[in-house]
Image (tube, rainbow, N blue to C red):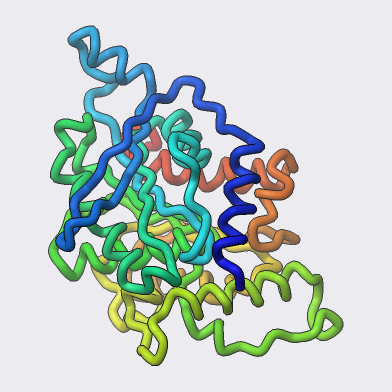
Length: 307
């Protein structure tokens, strides 16, 4: 409930484990908003691409695909330290791709739609500056975990509805898509299997209370699962964890995408709870989940190689 203290503790944890930036460079940009404030994004690029451009050549295979990464953290925390977004760095290096970490405004100081509008603004900015950034505008994807997965789904809908940049892929990891989960009662640990499920549900409920304006009804751009029409959206990837209260909502959204004619890949991680890979990143289960998610994102952005 104490957002300031939670953010402080989270920042201390991040500072204690610096990211490995081997092979990756980054630059921060400020994107102006209509009210005169600025949205900060950090663009990560493989050093090999930087070296090729500096020598007058081009990056291997020409322009690189781009991935906009929307961090998790319940729409209220989760922002990486400057130059330290581990997910963006890993994707940049492993895909390879230009990855854009978006420092969207956080709740409760900035309730919906501030965060999702920032994410969409970053998508428009990326597409408009594709040539300058060395990006192939036909290969832009969005991705994120938890709240970031919900933002990815909402941005895909927003871009379709507004005639915005075409997305090649939307990749959602344990996505937080439906505010109606905040209405579900929190059972006592004895009434439900393991405590991580109960703890996650408590946190998710609080997150939605922070994110949504009081007394307002959630629309599709706040909670992507509320969208009535899912046709015309880009191919999707959805991974859920078996012991996660967000599991059923993620699976239901994936099924609705399928029913709308959208190509969808779905994976369930058995025996895992929400955020387990943060606590046990070296376990076989965490490494398999990361490899599956990254592999499908790579295949979507490099279709010729995949085939």
